[in-house]
Amino acid sequence: MKLRRTITATTAALALTFGLGIGLSPGAQAAAPAVAPATAHPGTRSLAEVLAADGSRFDRRWGDFDIVDAAVRAVLAAKPTSPVAVLADGTVPLTAFLPTDEAFRVLAHDLTHRWYRSEQQVFGVVASLGIDTVEQVLLYHVVPGTTITARAALASDGASLTTAQGGSITVDVLFRPLGIAQLVDKDPDAPNPFLIPWKLDLNTGNLQVAHGISRVLRPVDL
Image (cartoon, rainbow, N blue to C red; front, top):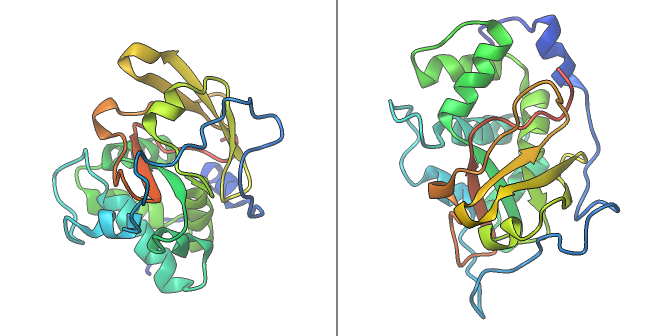
């Protein structure tokens, strides 16, 4: 993939590499969400299938997940054995927090101080970080080994979740009745992503479930 921008000093911080972790961190509360979908026989439709459902082309709908889809496909094209491939294996339970296209647009602005008019341009900024960095950022959005429903997440204020990237994120429930919760990442200076109430429990009934979030989780302090 041809990179269209050089990595700035800020984006270089993202290029740190991390190990692969599974499950909840030792500091997680007992109420940490680890609840399977409400079905006796959960399905095996993968999140990769969900992401690909609306096609592989960029569009003008900033509320969907075209850039995440493109990033997953780019990583697997360059590194077929990447742990990101778990998103295509519906027999493996996991929970993914998926940034919308607008969330990546905000990240691109934070990195370059420019607003981009197309998803293609935003993906160009993401690609400029390098495949290894994109891979680690994607893995930071995946909690392997557990199917966390929105209901379970909203009942788990303060729970610390270990991601497939090895770092952790913390669930911060602000107002449970309206489903208002954020995920606390490793960048204390940037606003935290919120769960998007109308984009929860994507792929419900399957071992792999996802929830849309309003910003890209950051595995390091930028």
